[in-house]
Image 1 (cartoon, rainbow, N blue to C red):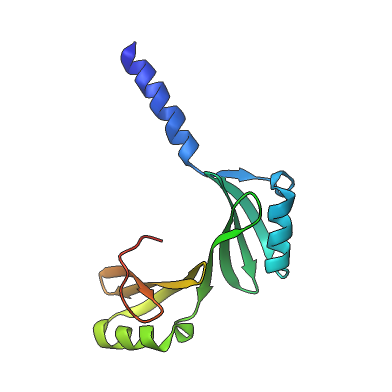
Image 2 (cartoon, rainbow, N blue to C red; image 1 turned 30 degrees about the horizontal axis):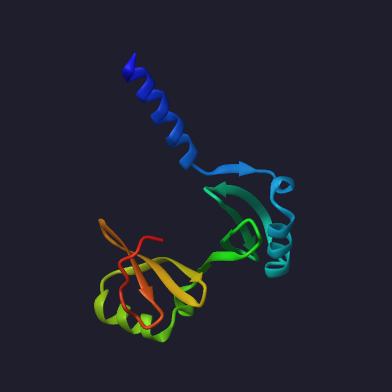
Length: 144
């Protein structure tokens, strides 16, 4: 009996940690207005509730974006797909120096407040790396 109760409680809490897809009509007006103002050209918008943050996954042109809002419409974080050519020069210099033999597979730019971070996925035969850099080219030990 005790094991079943613990299992039920564990399942309840694990279910609460996952994101829940929600229809746009259930997103607070302040969040929708802030989103529309910041990203007027967004298409294919999908909303989720992740904890107490509203998350929109969308496209602008052919680029993937993701943005997190508080319930009052403030942007917490914005992730967008960029090309390797769009990385800051300092990051490109570090990559040329320290990651020879790898090709850049995917690049995402994260903006949190006024801080920009860049997650770069590298590949070479039989190996894959994900490295996060700040705008000055420093490797940041952070999961994004």
